Length: 389
Ligand code: MG
Image: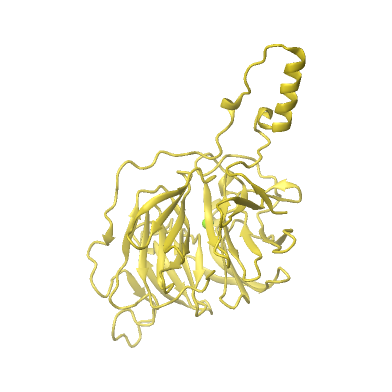
C-alpha cells in the first residue's frame, strides 16, 4: 500500500495525458512511424498542484514578548481561582518567569506544527502559501522547508523521527523518509480519492490515524476545488503492517484535530462542523480506543467550544491534559485552552490572533508552540508534551 515516489507528483486524473510516460512513449513511437510533425507535449498546460501564494511583503507584527508583558503573564487565565497565591494557580501553563512570545511571523495561515527534537526545530504549514516552514529553536531562524507543499495542513512525527503530512491539494497523507524521499501513506479509500486530509497522529504501533474533512477541496485558496468522491468525512486508520486503510468513525460533520491520551487508551477528535452550519458541532469528542484493533467505543463530547469559536487542533501532555486551539469567534477567546482529562477547563492562554493548532517542543517538551494565523507563538509551561518519537 505504501508507494515510494519522487516528490512532487500525485497522480491527478485531470492532467493532460502527455504526462503519462507510457502514453508519451507510445506517442513518440507513432511519431517515428509516421515521420509527421507533432507539436511538443503540452507540458505547459499542466495545472499547478496547489496555489503558490504571494508571501506577505513585510513583517507585519513585532517579534519577541507581546506588548505589556509582565510577570506573571496576564495572558494566562486560570479557571481555578480559589486559594490564589502566586500566579495563575492551578493552570499548568504557568511556569513562573515566562510570558507568551511571538517567535515568527509573515504567514497567511499557519497550521500543523510539529517539533523535531533531534534538530531542535518546528515545522509548520503555511497553507495558502503552499509551503512548510521551519523555525529553528536555537537562533530563531525561519526558512522554507518545502515548497510547493501541496497545500499541506497537519504534520506529525512518528517514533522513528519521520515527518508525516496531510496534503490538501495532494489529497493524501505522506511520510518523508529519513533520506528525504516521500512515501504515500494514503490517497484513496475504496478506490476513490480522499477529500483533503487535514490532521493526523501516529500511534506507538506505527498505525497512522488521520481525518478527512472537505476544507481542502472547497476552493482554490487552500487547495484545489474538486467534488468529493467519498460519501462521508471519516476518521481513518492505516494499518502499520499491511497499509490497509479502514474507517474508524464515520459520523463527524467535519473531523479535524486528532490526538491520543498518553496511554493511548483514549482518542480525541475535533468536530468543526460548525463551519458548515450554525446547528453543527463545535466540540471535541473522546472515545475509548483499541489502537491495535483500530476500534473505538463509548464516544462522547469531551469539551464544547464557545460558538462561534472553533477548535482546530490539539495535543496531550504527559498528565493526560488536552491543550487545544481556539479561534474564529470572540477575540477574547482566541488562544489555547487546557482541559483536565475529565473535561474540566483549567485555563486559557490568550493570543492576539485566531489560533489553529499547537504542539509541544523544546528539549524538555515543555514549550508550547502555537500557530496563530500570521504568526508562530511560543510559551514555556510547567507541563510536558506527551507525544514523542
Ligand atoms: Mg485542522
